[in-house]
Length: 125
Length: 297
Image (cartoon, each protein chain N blue to C red):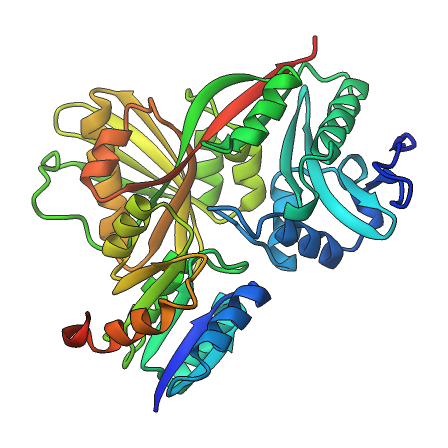
């Protein structure tokens, strides 16, 4: 079973992600801020990190830089979940070494296949 | 002494009266919760935790006795804060929770903060509104604020400077301490916004500076804040020579010595002559704000 670490401070958004992914074969961990998220990432070594870029303690971009410096997390897919306009989001994720982004608010219908595609890009529809 | 807050008539018979309460009557935790609720649907939500809000209040001289929470009965609808410094004030953190917008609460808060500023006999009030936040911009314009300039929030991911940029050859660098950095700010020529005023920088602490001299005779300095995870609060000044060349040397030196740190700096004017060189060395525009001002005298 793949483990996904969701770093998201807003409880409603976190609930929606977890509810949407519940029927699928994922183990979803949730961290409410950047510091907790970094500690959980170090300890649990998730298979994917879903990252809200606007966190209350450390900004998402800074957190990506920190995650990438942790041995064992250099290659873990980090997907930004953000309401940024698409041009800005694309520019930021490229610059900061994110593997992709999903626009907020997430679409519960499309979200599971978006996640699956990041795990297995060759099978993306 | 804070004057009594006004109450306005309720919008319907069965809804409680809306009133304003000084923010100092709430805990930091309550203010954080209210503020975060007002921002949940923002494109740039900028949420805070208690440590960040405490730091914000200290760094930007927020007067919580002159900042207000708007409330209907027990329900918080929104809030706005006022920074107070000699001669001027600054409106910040204005927000109304999404379900309570368009009922006049934002205007009520703004009018109260303007009234507070008038009582302080300051010359003007400023604020920064995120570009494309049209409802807020409309409200501020209606209250008499006018646009001053556009400001950028910029970032640079951690990395050594790129090899394909031509850096001025043989520049010399001097690293300066917090105390020396604070002294350099006294020579500053650029016009700061509230966030970048010398007082904000000194309050924030952890300042350092670089001074460079180019073979061509150009020279300048850079004051910045360095924390464990981030560089920020960049203030650049060219004393002699071409700002582009001086900036290339300053930024090159900064990131050569700090290759592992992310960088974020707020409120660089779009017309700043150093910006093109910063872009060459990997800086990106994150978003823009519009600085607005209301003259009171």
